[in-house]
Image (cartoon, rainbow, N blue to C red):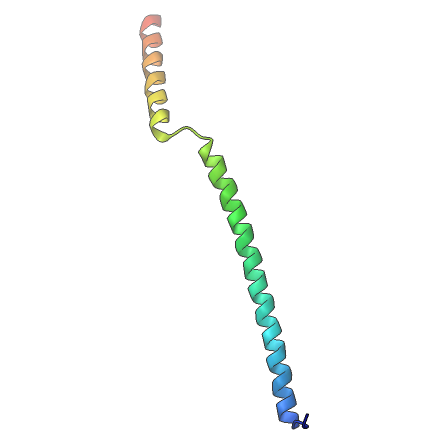
Length: 75
């Protein structure tokens, strides 16, 4: 192996450091995306346990009718 000049050594060191930095950044991004996926899954699972909007509307109408009936009977 032949000797490199000091400029080449400095460049090689900077390239190696930059490569490590990029690899660490990509690993960090993958970890962050994984945690976002987990939280997204939790939110979707939480939302799937709720009533659909049409059922909520029907229940609200039913409660309004019952309340109006009770109100008219108590008058």
